[in-house]
Picture 1: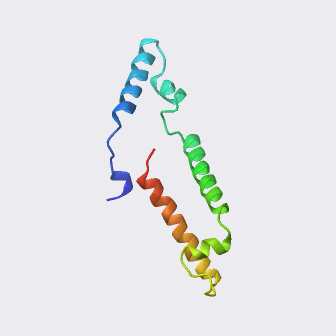
Picture 2: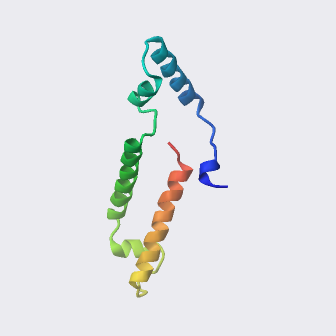
Length: 107
């Protein structure tokens, strides 16, 4: 099953808010899609890009908090000699943890 086929339940509060905006837009003769977009309830390409940049910025900020030797100590003892490949693996694990944390803590 691809991610595209995976459907998650719509949060009740979000659905109620979106329906309310659509009803009010129709009542006032406004375009419901524009009304939803005005309230940032649509994921437009521009909004999606902004979110991606924000996530990457957060990851970069988190990565900056670690000195290289601290990053290596996440997995290896300090007295062991380490290679660039070891650093690559530690950073990959750090990224995997970052992604998993985001999955486990949705908005």
